[in-house]
Amino acid sequence: MTRDLLIGVDAGTSVIKAVAFDLTGSQVAMTSRRNHYKTLPNGGVEQDMRRTWQDTVDVLKDLGERVQGLEERALALSVTGQGDGCWLIDAEGAPIHDGWLWLDARAAAEAREIAESEGIDVIYRTTGSGVNVCQMRTHLTWIKRHQPALLERAATAMHCKDWLYFNLTGQRASDPTEAVFTFGDYRTRAYAEEVLEALGLADLRRLLPPIVDGAAEAHGLSAAAASATGLPAGLPVSLGYVDIMCCAMGAGLHDATVRPGLTVLGSTGMHMRFVPDVDSVVLNAERSGYTMAFPSPAYAQMQTNMAATLNIDWVLGLAREVLASEGVERELHDLLASLDERVMAARPGAALFHPYISLAGERGPFAEPSARASFTGLDQTTGWFDIVRAVCEGLALAARDCYAAMGPTPGEIRLTGGAARSAALKTILAAALGTPVRSVAQEEAGAAGAVMMAAVQQGLYPDMAACAEAWVTPLLQPAEAPDTGLGAVYDALFGVYLDTRRALVPAWHAMVAARGAVS
Image 1 (cartoon, rainbow, N blue to C red):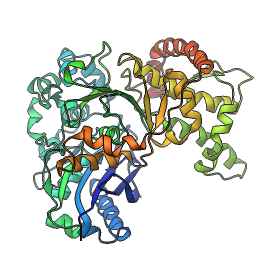
Image 2 (cartoon, helix red, strand yellow; image 1 turned 30 degrees about the horizontal axis):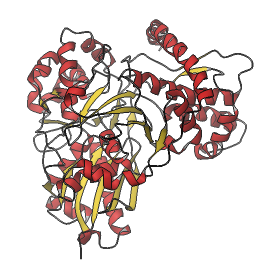
Image 3 (spheres, rainbow, N blue to C red; image 1 turned 135 degrees about the horizontal axis):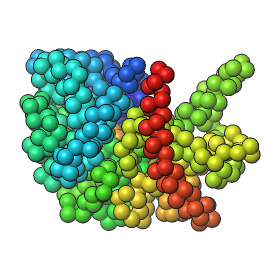
């Protein structure tokens, strides 16, 4: 039987997926399982590492049941997953603790200390990435200070996808995105000892695994993983880049001709611009954002909102709570079904919303663990759907804030993530950014990007640019031009948005202190 399928595993925050693609990039089948994690009273958010591997095994087995002859047809597999966090294993490869997720907020004080340290300039100039509470370097700093016994037992510090790759292949590795923006030099795509020194983590260098580029190198599926998943032993497995970079590849950011931007509106908000080469990287005075390499000479620069659709989930959750108090049960998807029409019928600019709903604060285009969401400008005429529209507008203004930190807004923005299905959000985003927005008809962009790396590694395409031209360009949808009248409203609001978020910083700090005093 012909080996005509590529498999992508995408272990996200909410869902773990296995997706089969044919060699032209068309999706053949997808299986998924809900992800599971727990939130702790101290702001920690942890995930059972063994369960994560078992869930991955299960989705691969489910895919084998759905796709006839998958074992004989699979050419290669690639794995990506949620970014940041800290997943520690011992010398035998066993977890020594539950994995820390990017949502984990307990290291807020450590993040602030690093950001205010003498070494921050070296850290930022070398990695090209700001320091945030969600990162492995911040988590390791907290663990070193508060739970050093864990580090005594640890042999390797991994991220989610690295843990899955280890279980699939037996290889301890990380990739040129997560390893480098945390501890490396974006110019060389290698670990940088000066960064570890500046972080005060040079003694933990032993925990960092080799860096493996999955577009150039693969390892075979181990016998144990083959037995567990039903896939053939020796199947080439590529370690994909972090999920957001795989999503960027699958959703069309890698385009040297257009040099577009990409906004991903999922649980978090990611705002990215294509950078053709290392010399074109632009760092900022706030020392914020991320710089990550493509498997090519190009880079992506990005600013990251801690929360995007989490804000919508929150405000609709309030509606569900009110309805439930009156005996009316509604699921989230019921409320989303008619949301576009009602949002667009509401008043633009009726209120101003800063979408910092995450308990971890904000990380783009500024890093502030104490940042919290707020409404400004409410009065007695403000209706419920005005508030919901203000939440959507807050996401668009946050995107504009992020793009402004990376230079001129790209001439075209490509949109993906769960909220990309919302016509209202697309209209609001285009108007707020003042640039055309187009969606990409790739349902599973993260898994697709991971599989594109495997396709290049297997020699199906000479490089990522050729693969993107074949797999992604045909999926680009017509662009929505910005509504200039609506854009004028958002132009006026944006200055107020910036002034308000800057003025709120002392209030955020005071609120954290006040809550601590009464908790």
